[in-house]
Length: 146
View 1 (tube, one colour):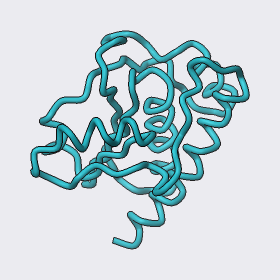
View 2: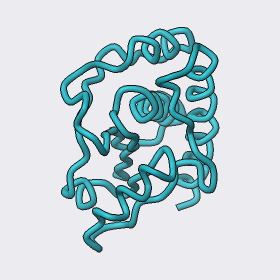
View 3: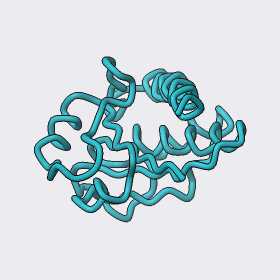
């Protein structure tokens, strides 16, 4: 079974959104993939997703209410086949930690970023959903091709 980890800064907005979109859409197409998320910083460990992320996800048919933030660990490179960063800052942080074991981290959207909606409004949280759906669609194509 393929294992995918989405990583952002605090694990309360972008990466849990990508996680729930991926979990839902992968199940919908019948792919068995273990999906999780984490943050490069420990600001919100144990907390739920940002209420704005939860509300936006719910409006789009995804349930983020059970999410609890966790911090990325070096062992995640051994545990997960794909470690996908939400932006270049997160990618640089992950690359600095990468011990040469497992696949090196990559940007979730290839050469594009998922902007942090934390300081923004409802449209910024919707953009995270939209970008996550597009990225997960590409992930599904990649997994089906392998």
